[in-house]
Image 1: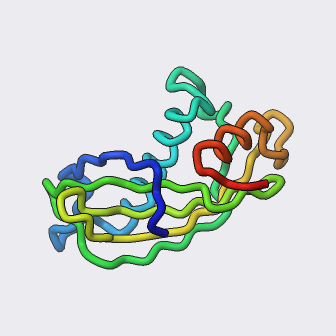
Image 2: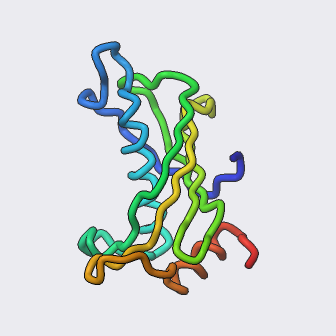
Length: 141
């Protein structure tokens, strides 16, 4: 999980904290999501102007391992890497790192499936998405 070509900076907000003074564990999933959306915008898979109903991806599975707490004002970034592309699913490896030291604060694996909201069913990953992701990540067929 070390070969990330994409990182997205995250601002730790006061509202992200729990009563113990560190980022609530559920916010890690939100940070991962922000990173994935930024990755997809960067690759041109969709634009900020599109409705999120047009994105056509939904969360199927997620696993997060927490290594260190994150605190208000800490300089962090989220790494995003497409690890595997199936027919309808995409497996993402992600991490949150301290941007100053490079320490891994948490890491996770997220499986998303492509979805047609109009038809209410899963669909194949669009070929354009597949090509852009594979090219960016250097994935082989």
